Structures are given as C-alpha cells and as structure tokens.
Image (cartoon, rainbow, N blue to C red):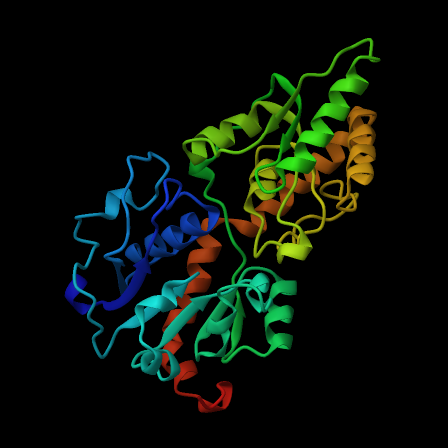
Length: 341
C-alpha cells in the first residue's frame, strides 16, 4: 500500500512552450516512473506555482497534472526524500539549501561546474549527487561538490523506440538542434558535393524548432541510414549524457558523433561509431568515410553499437536508483561525506 511507502518529492518548473520536452525532463520523468513501480517508495511531484502550461503534446509531465501523483502544497515531511534536478533548488530557501531538513538527491552534470552556468551555485549545497557518465563523475568530484557523487548511466526504454527501419528513405540526417549554424554549413556542403555524385544521396537536416514529440524525432532518425549528431559543444559545458546517439544505435543506425563528455561510455571511435573532432572539416571527412564504407565495415560498427546499448536499459537504471535510495539514510548521516555549511 502507498501508505507504507516512503515519499520521494519531485519539483518541476517550466514557463516556455517547449518546457517539459527536453531530454532532462524525460529523464526526471523516468526516475519518477522507476519509483512508482517500486515496492518501497512513492513519488510525488509539485509543480511550481509559476509554471506555465501550454498545449504541447511533447510535455512529458502533462498526464501528472491534477492526478494522484501531484501534491498541490509544498510541504516536506520528516521521512521524505527530496529529488532535485536543474534549477529545482529554487523551491528551497537559503537556510534549507545550506542545511536541508531531509535527504537530498541531486542530478548533476559536468556543465554545472562552469562558473557561468546558473546551476553552479547549487554545487555548494549538501546533496547526494547522481551523474550520468564516468567522466562526468570525475569532473564533479574534481571540482569539489558538496557530497558524494554516484554514477547511474542514463538508459533507454525499448518500448519507446521504434523497431529498426530496414528501408530508410534518408541516406544522411544531420541532427543540428544544438548547433544549427554548423549543421546548416555541413548540410549545404553535402548538397554541393552531391551534385558531383552519379548516385545522389538523400540528405536531411534537423534545425530548430524542435519536433512536437520525442516520437517524431525518433521516427525521423529511424528513417535515416547515417546520423550525424552535433551535441552541445565543450565550450558550452558539453552533455551530461547524450541520449540521442544511444537511441540511434539501438535503432541500428551508423552514428557519427564528436566527443561530448556524456557519450564517453558508449561512443567508441572505430568500434561503435565514428568520432570526428568537433569542427566542420573533420565532420565532413567523417561523413565521406561513412559513405565510402563497405557493407562489412558498416555492419561491424552497427552491430557493436547495438550490443553496447544493452548496458543502458531502463531496468538497470531503475535497479541502480532504488539501490541508492535504499541506502540514502546511511549516506546522508555520514557527515564525513559532506562539507560543513
């Protein structure tokens, strides 16, 4: 029964049309669902009063609004656990941030360690932090966050991903939402070079705005043979975890993706994908390499990539999260793991 389960409190806030649609929102929602399906915990979500709701089918939190999963009043109970991500710290006052009344789990990313990141100030507050890649864990620990850092790699839900399309229409898809200027430059160059090919390639580029839903995006990827991903650049903090490349691997696509910190555990150059340097010429040459690959070479990369996705299944993520929460009191009460505030 829910009465016997320990509450885990989530806080969500968005005030733009695409609010609730990002990879980060999807992942927090996944954590919420992991706990809904657990024997010991019951998650509850509080939507900040300043949240603006739009008629957007991509918002993964819409179905939780006005449901039994929502709490309408922000009130923390003695036995609760607080799970924060992004700017969720805003819901606490300064005294609560410095000395939280209950255990705090905080999802953190390497870009938060950049002084210009608005979430940087939160790293000084005590929390049990979760991060998504081995390198991300090292970055946060070396930066000196307040509290221990645990690695729980992001995961994909096979039920949400379409079966691999064996006859995709597009030869090349450039995913350029996070670097539209470079994506457009690569796209125009490929179109120019395509003029000199006897057998023309079908080339597509994804630029802002985002597609309405995650399913729309996955179908676009699935309708393409080779996917060129342009993640957040290192100068902007890189990725905590780069889920789109992993999803493409699951759909058995040939992936081209530069290093982005959050892809280090599954993007292995020459084994699971092609990893060019993050610049125009290097990416263009990597596309040429992909186009000229033999069927054997191509299938080798795709097979290896498909195999590595098995390390990132949702059931593994759920087990790791619940295992951490089962230890939360022991960790939280070990004052040697936290800085004095």
